[in-house]
Length: 266
Image (tube, rainbow, N blue to C red; front, side):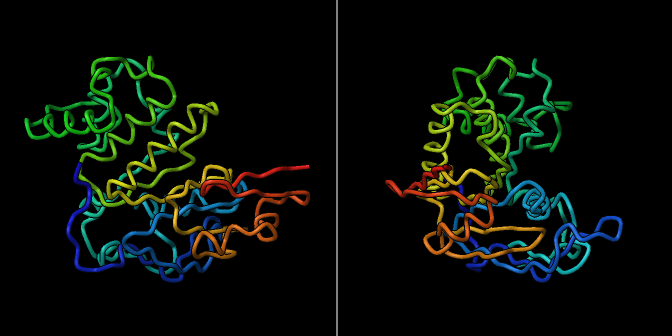
């Protein structure tokens, strides 16, 4: 399934000195980084490190209080935000809880065209055709008419990915995508993400579980107290000393196996 649009620039996202201020308090302070084509990022940090606010900025849900951010060369505040949102798909736990359980899988995906929770308007034929294409790609066709609440956690997350794919975005942003999954379902879902990347999709996802960083992730950002502690290529970031600091764990060892990193706490 084609997911990549032709863009001249290799830089798909650039943040320059961005901050978020709430009640005169910095939640995120003076962050700068860029993401290029072909890069897949994981953002790691403890609760309160600012990683979820970072995703809200990247997904255009929150504007920075200071600094600037651009997507495909289009700067926030100087372009139509709805055009930008078509280039980015967002999957979050909040969406999973917000949907009416009786909404069928087909309509969950279709609602992505309207940025709505549920379906409240008629769709055009090309939109319906696009949903059929997505369901085939995500192996959801047999579940098209099933109520959302009857799906497993992993199937629900796949349906929400389908919702995020309606405009063929180049980038999918996932906020703790494995939350609520058992071990087997988590590994199945992570394998599925790997296949999506192999098909040309780029992803950014937040996690505080290093074992969820799949081999296809190329870069890692370590966040601490609203700032970037370090960021760069995965193999440079996945070092025991700095992960121990970021995760707040003193007695910590890590083993790499088949491109995954497995922690052991003692």
